Image (cartoon, rainbow, N blue to C red; front, side, top):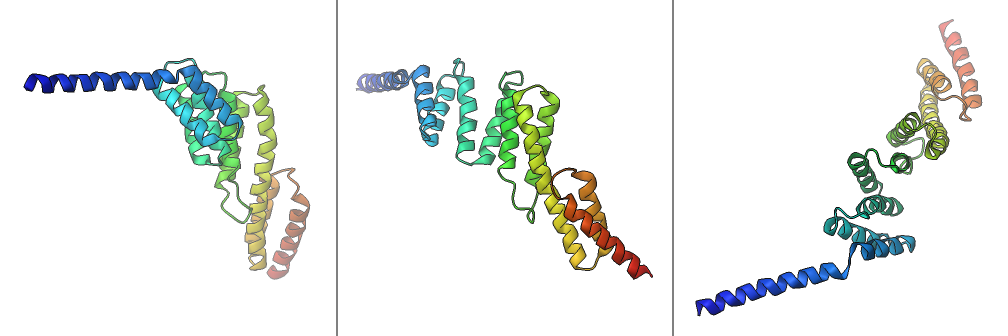
Length: 217
């Protein structure tokens, strides 16, 4: 009886193992990457992530594994799940620091932060982080096409930061804290040149200086 029971257990393990390998063999790396890319192109980003994750888990040494890692990050970006995308891009950058896709990866990290930039009256930490990433991209890969694109985003970040600084200055001005307002307006001129807000800032600087002079008399 004991022998029969042992035989049954061994048979169950053997057949279960075979079934597992058959499932795995039904979808080789080539098929998983093909399915993932098809779903990605069709906008089925969740399904694409599922295929790419399986490829990573089942075939970590496949020539397609690096592509899968990158496309997972891209899929999260397309889903507007920027924190997950940043994590995936950062992981790719740490695992493959010399990969030819690194300029693209750094650019996309900056873009993830940029997409989270709010209106000038809200917290601007995302604009700061995006700007920092794009500056780093330009310094590390000055001749890369993504560095060139990053320059335009730096200007957009600066405009958001300048508008935010102007808004704070305006708040001081309306509260009749003219010295604080003047300092903030001058910081806009010095920190964010050529972003399209100088004209109105200069007007308020002149008004602040006149009011400060008038109050000191």
